[in-house]
Image 1 (cartoon, helix red, strand yellow):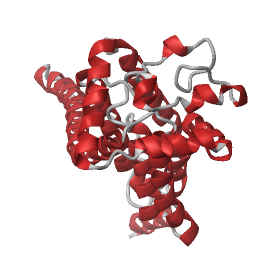
Image 2 (cartoon, helix red, strand yellow):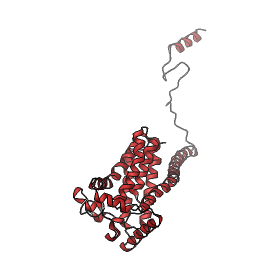
Image 3 (tube, rainbow, N blue to C red):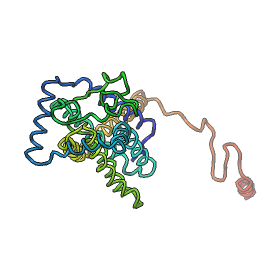
Image 4 (tube, rainbow, N blue to C red):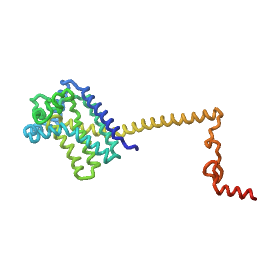
Length: 302
């Protein structure tokens, strides 16, 4: 198998991420349906007794020592850790890189389908009567973000704030965790592989950016991407093999056709030696070795 080229991989990842980002913007749902979906998720969690968002959000709001670092983690880690793990795999575990990259991409595109089918208002954008505080807006003086998710001030229009279901913050963190656990060779890397997705899940809920079921959906999307990735890789390999076979067939056909035209015209193939002949004992045409010359002299004497 050919080793991936860094510039080709960088280009591919850039194209997929640009498509993902552009897709998020194009599939914005209307506010009414997004709020309805958010409230439905909140009611379902209440019925199941798993609505952990409120107490976590209240804790992060009341304790800046927790809320401010959580806001920075939400705004930065998925942009830093995910590419870092990809680069680590590319350099240190190249045999596993292609499959891991395909898994990440397949799950990301599946997440885009989720944003399209189920635009969801995050807890922080619900009416204040529901008891949530947007910690990023609350602590915005400490960061570069404003009141529109983690986007820099003035660039809130460049993000889809209703792309909450599934949580790809959690999905990507889970992917990173699996890679670190599976391919890390030190206890520290494996511990980070466990801690990072758990920390991310707590952060996205405590900052009121996601519901617990958003996090569950993010994990489910990663599971579906894991199952889909091998089929996608096989399809790509078949297409590549077909393209290579077509190229070889074209080259072979051209060569055979040229040979056939030579035979069909009755032309004799060109003499490579150009009229120079060699005999046993000669190394260069027209130049006889000393041994061959001695044999000829002896034969003439007889």
